[in-house]
Image (cartoon, rainbow, N blue to C red; front, side, top):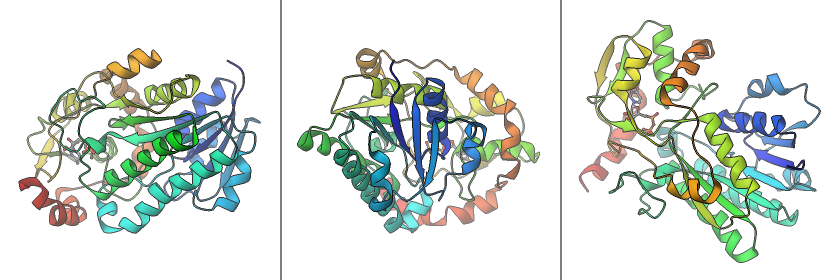
Length: 335
Ligand code: UDP
């Protein structure tokens, strides 16, 4: 494939940095836009020597700063966003600004530059607690908390820009992405970071409920591959699930990691299962996941040192950190 000039927003984050790695390996030129609010320059440290990589610290809402960076760009990957449930409940303004206004700003910068592809990183959290497993893209949209809502609103903006302005857009809905460099900010979230830090500290894994709930854990290189497939295709105005092709229990994860467990209360608004129906992306883009759960977990263990700086969560500190979650989402459970 000919060399493309790519813009990756959020390229210094967990998923973004893996995408940047992949694009450079494919011979493309990459401009990363990241405000380093949760992304980290260290995530791109190993790629610093590449002449094809340009790293710019800027906020997606700062149009004057970002617009010139889109000049001559062909592919745009909009990955920049605030993640995590609890802070989204506590600070909805920040989430709206980053995930909704920020998306509109990036869309406008991309439109002015007449880019040839716009790929958006959406979230499977838009399905809330689905009725059907595996869950197809046509399932009802039921965001349960501000993070899920703002990612969904961003997706609507992207599809709307495709519809009104004829921008070639694709939205990819990720299911439980994991892999090396998965974020270890101070906030409580993403089970892998929690469990790996607990393993390093010889503390028990804090298993939610009975651990029988399952997640569609998708390895990050497969996600990067899906993003590149979407950019390289001619499909437009479509939404695609990106999942591993299966779903795995927390107890299975514990079995693979090895070590003692302690149980903590089930959280309100949480699905017992996430499982993507990936028939659409397989058919339309010819994409399929390549990394098995067992191999993925092994890769995490091989990189476990990354989590030495991560906070070690205990049932007490989790109870404290998730107070707002229980306070605001509890009624949703019985609704
Ligand atoms: N989980 C757990 N212990 C933890 C954190 C998470 O057992 O300390 C479980 C949680 O119940 C869920 C899965 O791990 O079934 C994935 O949780 P995460 O917060 O990573 O993602 P999400 O709930 O958004 O799918």
